[in-house]
Image (cartoon, rainbow, N blue to C red; front, side):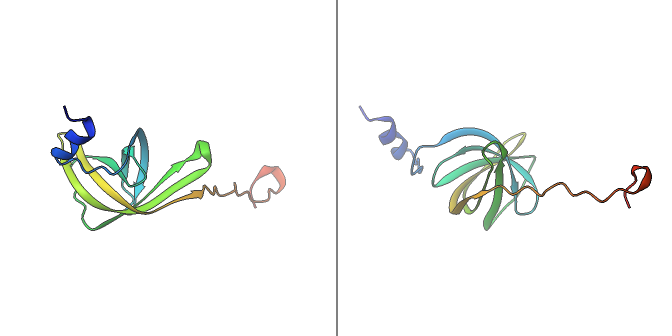
Amino acid sequence: MPTVDQTARMFGEKRVGPRESLNLPLRLGDGRIAVARDISAFGMYLQIQGAYSMSGPVVFEMEVAELGLKFTADGEIVRVDRHETGTGFAIRLRNPRLEPLVIAPFLTRPRGKGGRAQ
């Protein structure tokens, strides 16, 4: 009897490595928000509400504030799934990077008499 991995390969499964399920928002290069549903070292699956078309390279970033990190990458679309509620994209990652999350310091203006900003 074939293993799960052998069966997946027989039916066109193209995942290179194990994936981790998640549900994290990310920002695409055009500013649109998507949700990452799973990710591996080599790819990810993301969903966008409504009908959405993308082609060519995809650029995105995902902030993980709890860890103080920002994940950025570009990728190649390898599959598009159309659903009633949205569009799903399987992405092959290229140039993935984890960077420190830089949060701009709160800017204040000096206050004059009466507590008003000058």
